[in-house]
Length: 112
Image (cartoon, rainbow, N blue to C red):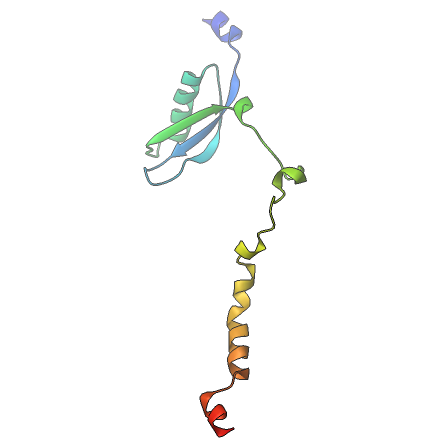
């Protein structure tokens, strides 16, 4: 039994849990295990002891591909689509009020 434990190589697994059918999977932590089946058991014991869930994922850490913000070209926008952004809409109420104050009213047009 001691020889089996000494020969086993443990690898890191990232754990994702879906708590109910309408929620997405969320990252809850990582575990060390000798196999994916063992990782599922360890993850269940560590992260679902008190909580109920409908789905549990364990993913080998080396299988996760990562891109960071240091790679500016990867995250650059391919097309200029600023018209899809909603940044300027917060100022619309003030602009509309100013426009209405400057606009001619029907009574002013009739007087002229």
